[in-house]
Length: 231
Image 1 (cartoon, one colour):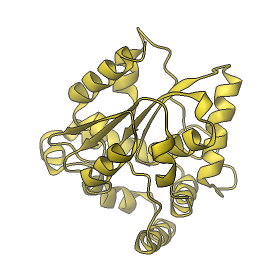
Image 2 (image 1 turned 90 degrees about the vertical axis):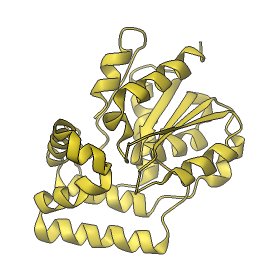
Image 3 (image 1 turned 60 degrees about the vertical axis):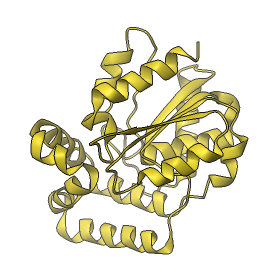
């Protein structure tokens, strides 16, 4: 999902786009995941690659991982890029919805799940006018193990609230959100922006939850501008 950004940045920066545990080509393991485990995986990856400090960029669940990692080991973070995400933990209603989704995947399989997700992930304009992006998203989700997807749903349901850590973030932070994001609406990004001292917020027009794929040119512009000011 980050290919458009990797291609855009790789001439100027060292870019690492990894498959989170249980996703893509990373091993599924036992499927018992927590956000803490994902954060430890990220720090372990940085250690393995001998990266002392990195700018962390995460969208949705990736944002949860980035925030927990910054809360846990801020000295390893050179900057934060938080996209279509939030600091709050799941409400009880959201936890129950994730439980329902896990049961749905176990009973119906991945294909019906993907169909149900497309309209939640993408703005209506993207669905009607950009079939290539719709197909790309469908293909990415289809490439994941149902065990990995269910494990991630459990991890998101059980994650901690990182809101209290936001005022203590000392790193420059870029926040990007699609104006039509139904899963993590712009109000949540505005709330993070108000709490993170050195943060910048951009709301992308006609974009939904996957703003980096839906409005790639605008997204990359803000990305490049932010990174250039870190040096």
